[in-house]
Image (cartoon, protein in one colour):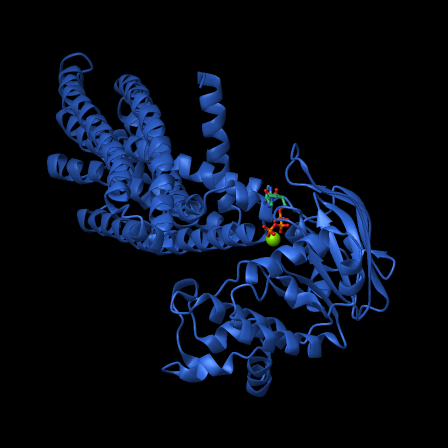
Length: 603
Ligand SMILES: Nc1ncnc2c1ncn2[C@@H]1O[C@H](COP(=O)(O)OP(=O)(O)OP(=O)(O)O)[C@@H](O)[C@H]1O
Ligand SMILES: [Mg+2]
C-alpha cells in the first residue's frame, strides 16, 4: 500500500469515528465543551502557582519585582474589590482544582455513556445489516468473520472512538499549556514545540507499524473465530473421521499466528513508550540549562516552567500513545464499515403492494436465473403457471434447479430474466412481508433453534395460541415422539436440534409450516428423512391440508407425490415434462424412467 493510499485509508476510518460521534450530537458537543472547560480550569489552577511563589518569595503579588502574571492577577482582584491575599489565592487555587476534577468526573461518566451508546448502536446496525444482507452475500463469506466483526471489531471501533476523544482532550490541554509556557518564555517554548514535533514524528512510525500489525490481527482473528465455529458445527464429522489431531493442529496454527502478532503489537507499544519517554529527561535537562544560562530566567519561573513542562510532556506522551492505540483499532473500524457497506446493499427491493390472498394463479414467465454475475444459468426460460389451490409436485435430477425455483418464489432472489406474476402482478411489486405471510415453507435443510420444541414450532406464528400449536403438532404427526420426550413439548432440543433425529427435526419443521395455516405451502424434500409409515401419515395430512391451498412439493421419492394434481419434471433448469402421475407413466417419459428405477431399487 502506498503512503497516499495508507493515509486516505486512515483518514476515512478516522472520519468514521467522527461520524459515529454525530449519532449523539448533543452529548458529543457537551463532551467537547467539557473538555475545553476542564482544560481552562486546569490551566487556571496551574497558573495560580505563580502568585503563590511570589507570595513565598516577596510576601505579596503587587510589587514590581513580582512576575507580570502575578501583577495581572492582583489587578483583576482589585477590580472586584478583593484584596490579593495569600488565603484568597490559595482558595482560588482550590476552587479551580475542584472545578477541574468535577468537570473530569462529569466528562468521564458522559464519555463512557456516549462511548457505550455508540457501540450499542453500531452493533445493532451491524446485526441488522447482517440479517438484511442477501443470501448470496452470506454464501460468499465465512460466518466466523461476521461473528468476529460484530463481536470484537465493534469493540475496536468503540476503542477507536474512545482514543479519539482522549487524543482531542490531550491535544486541547497540551495546547493550553503551551500558551501558558509561551507566556513565561516564548523562546524556550519554541524549542519545546520542536521537541513535540519530533515526538509526534517518532510516534507516527509506531502508528504505521501498529496499524499494519492490527490488520494482520484482524485477519487472524476472523480465521480463529471461523475455526471455532466450524469446529462446533462439524463436531460429529470430526469425531467420525478421527480428525481431532488434524483440527487441533489447524487451531493451534491460527491461534499461534494470532497471539504471536498480538505479542508483536505489544512490543511495538512498549518500544514506542520507551522512545517517547527517553526524550523527556534529555529535553528537561537541556531546558533547565538553557533557561538558567542562555535565557537567564529567574528561579521561580524556571521552577514553574519545569512543573508545567513535566505535565505537558506527560500529556504529549498520552496523546501519542493514544494515537498508536487508535491506529491499532482502525482496521476494526474498517471491518465494521466494510460490513455495513458490503452487506448493506439491498438484495431485493421491497415492493409496496399488500397482497392478502392469492386469487387466481402464480405464473412464471420466461424465468431465467443464475447465481452471481458470471454464474451459469440454473433456470432457463422457465414457463409455468400454478393455479390457486392446485397441488403441484416438482421432480428432477439433483442440481436441476428445484430448490432455486422455490427460492425465487420466496423472493430470496429475483429472476435474472423474465418475471414471476402473482394474479398478474409482478412479484417485485408486492410487499415482501405480506407475500411471506401467505406462505408456509419447509426447507430442504430444516433449521432447529436451540430452544424448546414448543418455541421451535411457535416460530412459524409468533402469536399462535397453545391449542393452535397442538393442532399443528397433531397434523404433522409429531405428537408420538414429543410425548415420549422427557419434558414433552417443553423439551430443549440442543444446538440445531442436535438431540433430535433427522425425521423428528423434519416433523417439527412441518408443524412450524402447518401452524401458519398458509394459503401457499412450499415443501422442499420435506419428508425425505421420515420412515415410510410417518411419511404416509404426513402425506395424508398434506393431502388434507392441500385441499384449500396451493401446494408445491419437491420430492425425490416419487411415491410421495402421486396424488399431486400435476407433476412437473425439471431438468437443467427447464420444464421438460408435465402431467399427472398416470399420464406421465402412460408414455415413454423421463418421469416413467425415474419411477421404474425407484421401484426396482425398492424390490
Ligand atoms: N447459493 C448458490 N450459489 C451458487 N450456485 C448455487 C447456489 N445454490 C445452488 N447453486 C447451484 O445451482 C444449481 C441448482 O441447485 P438447486 O439447489 O436448485 O438444485 P436442486 O434441484 O434443488 O437439487 P437437489 O435435488 O440436490 O436438492 C446447482 O448446480 C448448484 O450448484
Ligand atoms: Mg434442492
